[in-house]
Length: 179
Image (cartoon, rainbow, N blue to C red; front, side, top):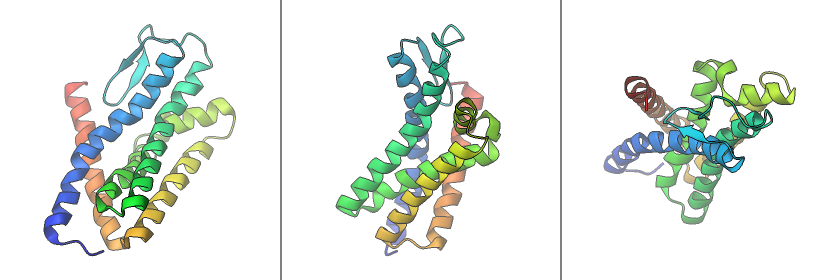
């Protein structure tokens, strides 16, 4: 990877707004599906729920659950397409963070509490199936982008560390403010 220190610092700093935007976009996926299905949804930085405490139809739980991971994958794919077309390094943090967002949540956030586990359970696919599929899709996107930009494991390790720090900032913001 041929990036000078000034641009590398810019990339690292980009992860801060990307983390917040990624959380909001993930939750927006849940919210928009719930609203499309006719539920009056409440939207926050790290959680979306029906205002009256339950969905209009039990099947909405599955569709609303799918919305978040689907929007996360959509954001990663859109970033990859931009990266492929323009070879821009600045799209990389966006797609990279999507992998870390789901990885961190699934590994450290209590797997059974995550969207992918709920989707797997509702669909009768076993506890880890959807989570593994989502992580593989996001990892393949990261691998493709890394190859395209010639980003090695060392720099991906730095990006992973920065992503974890930014993820913890978002979680702290949510816990402190309740937004």
